Length: 211
Image (cartoon, rainbow, N blue to C red):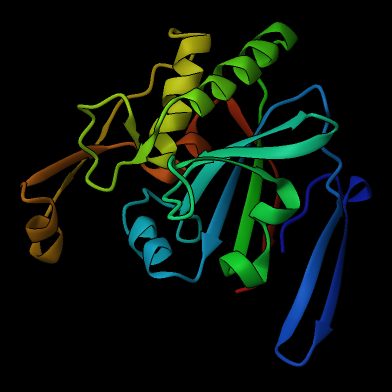
């Protein structure tokens, strides 16, 4: 396990046979900063998403992590069958719940190029998505503003903060076999989940791996 700022990190693990509950006590996050959180899950959807990453073989989902309403919340877009919208707001501990979400990996990356006023603007911008009926875009259509995938949500929100600094380009991938059949096209243009990790605006902070 790779650690950064070890003296700021305290995580408790409680185990019994093949099951355990994990409580995130303190990750040493700065309340005046904004972060991206990447999550890897042992699910069919997680396996599919990882196949379309550039380098990261663990992460399958990404969201914003900000201190809001006296707690750390995760703002992200993911299919939610129990709601009328796929825009989700979860407490950090719930987002990383191993038993519920089958989480085996996560990492945090600071959006270090954001100023305090930009972080306040980001908080307001991502909250506005709550008033929209967002649909998780499984086909990466990019034609409907109410249809977003998780990384597209990140790109869109940051672009509204600073379109020069956060001007992301689509990654192109030639499709073959079952993927060509599923998407019904030869080439896919999309934002890979891990694309932010190679961008200078984001700095690695911490990761946990139970694989």
